[in-house]
Length: 367
Image (cartoon, rainbow, N blue to C red; front, side):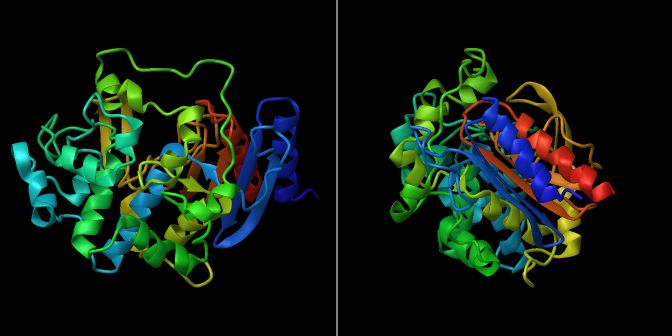
């Protein structure tokens, strides 16, 4: 009988061979056990060096879910509360009527601060203190908790600065001590990549077709200004890779899947949250219009409640994770007990590889 590992390996090999992908990395945990650890294709600009299990992939918003995992783990430890008001620990943030914003609002993307200044540069995005200062002085788009709008670029600074102010240590430090070191994946999950590990990072390749862009003047355009729109060239920049932007980051599939596995239940005896908290973080808390993207949406507690588009169906309240604009995906399913990560280095808004893997996993576990 063909194993799931063999099926996934064959599928991603085919995607590389037919030119659909350049490099892929897949990991699947089932009830805490690694059952798939597969790679295909190449990792470098010249398309000569093979992807390995330890290759790090810049993974766009997929890493927002890992930032949320840090917050939930710290709440579980009693070091944070969801109702912590930002103004209590970050007084400057209270300006312009933002004194009611809480950690809960940040995780739910209802904080009302979805946009950096329109003229922000990538260099400024890589400057933590600068970004926190301008967000503290920002005027809110809506009163906290009254509307939903995807905080594409600001989410990481908001959750990260709340963690830093409340616990006295950076979110990168807390990622390490509260999440990745206990799970044994500290070398595989990063907001900003340590300089000594840059040689492990896969090169992101430009797609043939242009990337979709928001309509000029739209809320999406304001939330993702032209100077900050990520593409392969931006993702390959040394300053972007090494900076703690937190709304994006660099991981291995094994590392990302292990973090989700630690949310689901024990991985080598380590569980990040209680079963009750797991249910709460996966349950959709908002359904309606995304005021930034101008599309109907649903949102869980720091995660999107969905699998990759075109993947297997999943029960609402069971599936939670994050997709990245470069086609990466990491997510978990409470009902089946799986945690999945699919990473790629062809920078396009295309989750077909992740959907293929998801269908294979769902079919294998249904037998």
